[in-house]
Image 1 (spheres, rainbow, N blue to C red):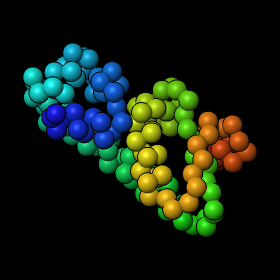
Image 2: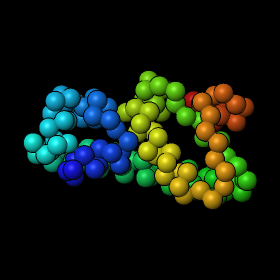
Image 3: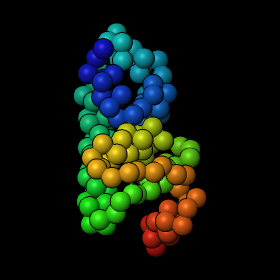
Image 4: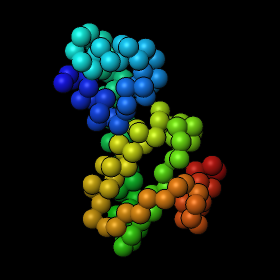
Length: 130
């Protein structure tokens, strides 16, 4: 266990996803995760920035949820990494880590559905694209 591996897990990244996000080789990620190689400060900073982004996005979502005073909400999830990237996330795993914070902070029922598969998530896509 290393600080790098803990941050990577908190960010919701697999080793493959971390390598792509950090623009390093999968072998480097494996070595940093096992403590064979020290993670450079820039790598740790990039993971911290992603985690900060996840926390900010979750806080914003929770504020919107509170405003709506609903009994249930739908969260539209990206179905693949390409869709997650179109939303500003490096991969689906990073989106899931943000969504986990939303679900943990909610005291109402949360329903996960593929983005655009229901009228409310389709409307959310339309609003985002405007």
